[in-house]
Amino acid sequence: MSRVQGHGGEMDRVETYRGTTVQMNLSEKVRFEVAVSNGFVDKTVQALCEGGRTGEVGDGKIFVVPLEQAVRIRTGDSDEGAVTPVGK
Amino acid sequence: MNPAIDTGDTAWMLMATALVLLMTPALGLFYAGLVRSKNTLNTFMMCIAAIAVATVTWAAVGYSLAFDGGGDLVGGLGNAFLSGVDFAPREGTAIPELVFFAFQATFCIITVALIAGAVVERMRFGAFLLFSALWSVLVYAVLAHWAFGGGWLIEGGTLDFAGGVPVEMASGFSALAAALVVGARKDYGRQALLPHNAMYVLLGAGLLWFGWFGFNGGSGFSTGEGSVLAFTNTLLCPATTLVVWFVLDVIRGRKVTAIGAATAIIVGCVLITPAGGYISPGWAMLLGALGAIPSWAIIAWRTRTRVDETLDVLAAHGTAGLLGILFIGFFAQESWNGVSDGLLYGNAEQLWDQVLAVLAAPTYAFVATFVLLKLIGAVMPLRATDREEAMGMDIALHGEEAYVTGEGAILLLPDDGEKIGVPVADPG
Image (tube, rainbow over all chains, first blue to last red; front, top):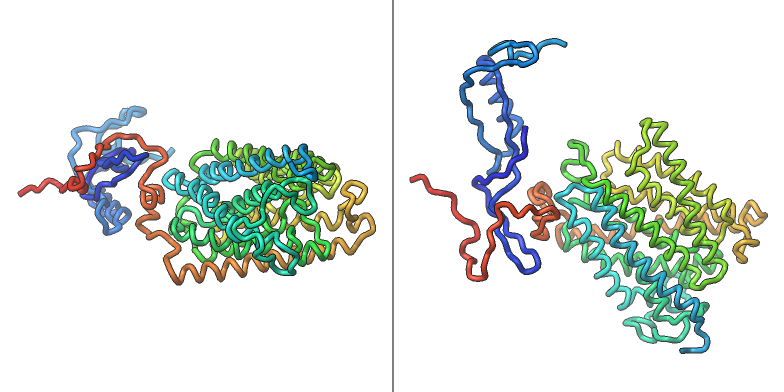
């Protein structure tokens, strides 16, 4: 999860500081990245939609992209094993 | 200069007035640090608004209603619009009435600003301005008359050195009423709403303590013994509150917290406000220690309720002010104050006079504020919309941000009006 600045379909904000009027083109946004195995893709998308929807402009978009390879550094697990939670 | 004027007293009271005025921006810092960053400016602006509005209403009618004449419930209008307020000494003091007026004005200002703590992060700025104007006259001036200006409490023998009645209990119980009428923030109890800058909170508390030496030390209107006693008690009492607060914090969470310490400073200063010039330094230290406990407990308890009295004005000011007033009834000592003894020194009557004040002042403040806000709410919305609340009051109500980065900001020149609201690129 990371804080980013961006611009979508929302209205621009106009602010005034001691007579200097400016148009703020960037708004605070949150970028959420999650890597899951194939079986979880639909569930993840569904969960994000349910949790993030307010019905107003600015709720955001979800892009699903394929990942070529995944490796868990600690164990050397790759692909499916790397994104599957393991017990401590 | 009028020969009845004491230059030493006047010099100190000029200084004390400036010290008390500083307390309002200090409160702004304290409050602003306690809210989320998107509401920083709005929170501070409520305190600035109190200076603007309450000064004007005080000069217009507030001062007169509080300090003109000895009516039981309210003063006259003889000093309305500063009529007759000049270089002649204020009755009972050796300072010009102009200085007395200004000193009392700063009390009215900070009391109005204190109530903002109950409604920050959601009350509309315009509604708060109207509320400030009406409250400063209908509640503050009336209670100031009762306790200071010749009203029924002071005439009946109630002792209140620096404002346990009109400042502390009035703001605390009005804050509770305001929180109930305006309602909780929409995220209250659902999300963690955390202080955004603990350093502002500490700095604000420190400056408030500094200003409080003028607040209590100036409430004898002289450089006499009462002022000296109150001044020193303002050091002693908050110190013991701090120590006890540390202990309470350790017992609950095993750590001494900084925001807890800032709160303890306020609570300690409030505790000694009514009692400053009436109790010995030793009893002041006991008052600070004992008085920490209820305020600490109420803050711990309040956050688990549905009442979003956001910055705990009731716990810090209402409760502590009430305790300070009651404490006088037990521990006042004529050998220190030259006025009256408390129960412990054989004068049970004094305790009754104090009990009367803690029954009457909170009741009046709560009911009057409740009704006043209901009436204002009938004329205009008290709250910002949910959308504005989510966006933050700074951008929504003031068009400014406290921590502006400037990234993505485009300068608008006077003839750029039509550029506002640049259309989104059209794909087809």
